[in-house]
Image 1 (cartoon, rainbow, N blue to C red):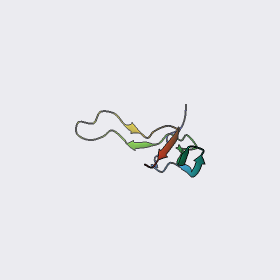
Image 2: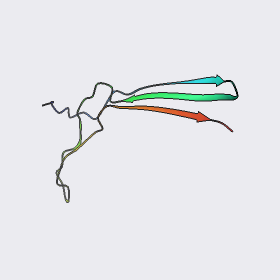
Image 3: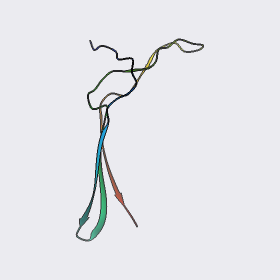
Image 4: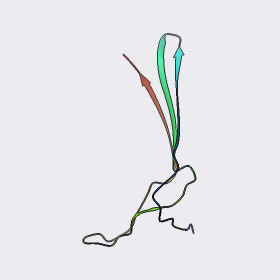
Amino acid sequence: MQSIILSSTPFDIASSRGITVTGIRNIGVRFAIVNLFDRVYEIRNGTGISVGAPQYGPRRGFYIGLTKSF
């Protein structure tokens, strides 16, 4: 069981780079990791009107993006 951190400040990291491929020029590549240390953190504690359960932030996620300008 993981402990709950009551701070909503996850550590994210990202990197991007432009590359040139023969025949397809100027492609942008991005890589990002959200919640790098995979901390469980609470966004809302679930108290209030019509709120029945606490809500937590996202777990660790890996994202890759490609862009091409026309």
